Image 1 (cartoon, one colour):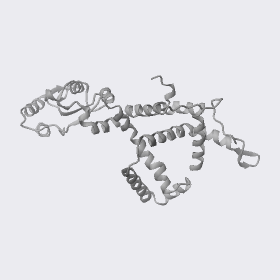
Image 2 (cartoon, helix red, strand yellow):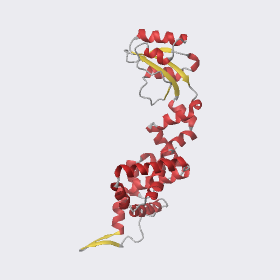
Image 3 (spheres, rainbow, N blue to C red):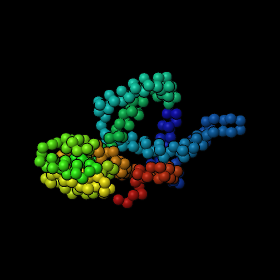
Image 4 (cartoon, helix red, strand yellow):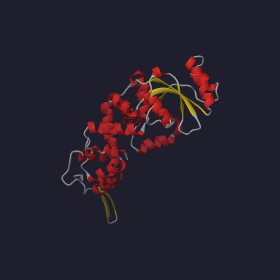
Length: 290
């Protein structure tokens, strides 16, 4: 199977170079692979089947692997993690995993170098995109670090607020002392944070650390938040911000588009083009105007 996929991938490389009728061909398409009675299966028929069923995914995966290899350096930590993952698979799946590698015509070293390490490189592309466009992404998602305590009683919220303003209690102590389950931990929030309602979000994105603690009635009308902006300069907590932003689906999609544009990914084969358009629209950068 591995050899077949590599053969398909090699043809897909040709599709990126262009073809006259918008459909990639193989030079020995009429070569017979299998004959059963009067039925002959040729290389061309196998290629057409593989192209329609797996061409789009193979093209995108191979391109992504190539981009990740160019953008992300392999580290000793990646190698160690890959070897640890391999050991875990062997221990967990035993002979089943060994059989899988044999079916793929793949050695353990090939599995590590061709799959486990590249997958780690690909995972780091989003973080690299954020790092290279840090200010812009942070502005778009209004990244801020804040402490939010939630209360179901206005009296509890006001009591906690008084203690926090006087400095007599920490955030954790004020929360636990007034019937709140909030931890008092300073947390990074973005426009995509689902655990912040609109009124609290407005406060933390417009306030500054100098404003101190304030009480905000939440828009449900049944709860109250005591909030403080700890830091609204994302560069001060850059690594944490990158980790938080990397988990946002729209940021990952933007990263995909960013790198596929950077490497001028273009598809000429119509079958693959249609498949990528349907299943991998963020990768189809040739139709994007900006």
